[in-house]
Length: 339
Image (cartoon, rainbow, N blue to C red; front, top):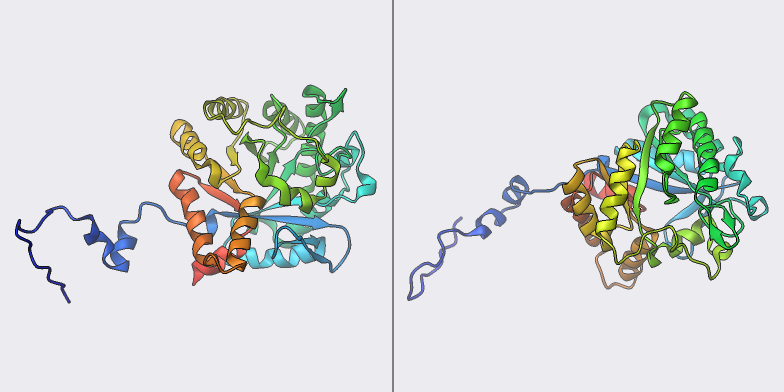
């Protein structure tokens, strides 16, 4: 059924009408420039010690620390929904946290046991990403070793290499260094190759900013209390900088990164777009804990439509150029996309 419009005194205005393509749902779908699917998603999961345990994180309603058995069970839903990968983060017991973060190099630590159980259950049906950084294991909450009040670079990298190798030994598919030490991608790549892990991929947190949006994540892994009034500005990027992100990405790609990450996500979509357009390399983005918490809180108060803003926010990452998105909404979004 057509709708007739009456011409004004100056005749029918435009011959080009962009609204024509927007009139019907099928037409909007035909001309859509970006699309979102479950295969674009990576689901971050927090694991803790114990059995049959699920502890909700106060600052991230709906997100839980899960014992390994519970995590393995829930990952089955991600597999069934077609989510490409999960990313594991450990809530290390306080008694195991030390200044030298020694537990990070324990082949039987929480994260390595979790990796083995997930791969035993699902094999290659879903990818497993593991974080490489020392903050979940350090008593000071920093991502590296601290000497005289300063996070040292090269000494930290030596520990990160060992951490990456034990995670690869456990069966991890993608090693994801999030520490922002200079030169760690090349060093970890060499270490993995020397240990026989040539197929293991490296996802570099290449442009990770010293952001205020990480607070709930630190609650989740139990590092906020360790960090206290400290900060990570001497190694994570200044939120004021954009060109510097391109230098960081260029270095990580040259050192052997298979894909690069921008973190946080929505406040840094300009960085995602610049990275993708400059390098045309696999570019991922992390919709971080603070972003999840904001949308969840607004929806809980009735100020926003939860499903609508969730899907719109994820589509925005794709529009900016992201190939994949780490998001705590992954399961919920995948279900919504299935309809």
